[in-house]
Image (cartoon, rainbow, N blue to C red):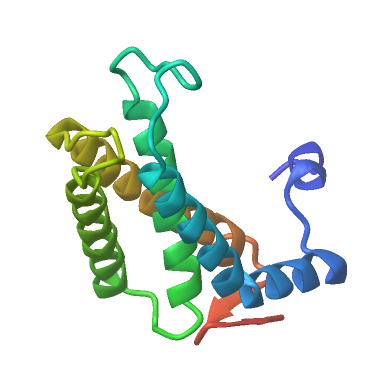
Length: 156
């Protein structure tokens, strides 16, 4: 590596390391708030004039479940070893949450409808969220050399 590349690479200072540990500890609280906001927002009656999407809200579904999967994986990685089973469990959980979310939108008074394409956007978003989560995890911990994540604890 040349000196310019090395100077531009991510360095893990004690302050950055402390931030990562602190954010990881708060992941459950952040996940809870996010999930409550997500499920509340998808079940409020949909006034057409307030938020007109003209039938194409797939990006909202994609982004919402991207975030949900990312946060759920972060939270579960505190308690479970990171492996393909964790990834599959998080993806299946978010797919089930998305299906339940779509089905319960048919309840009277909500003024929403169940759409299979919305569920596909949900599951695609969660798959991409997990992919980004794994890539960030790999970049931050496996490639940095100064910090590595092992047994769910950040160590020097």
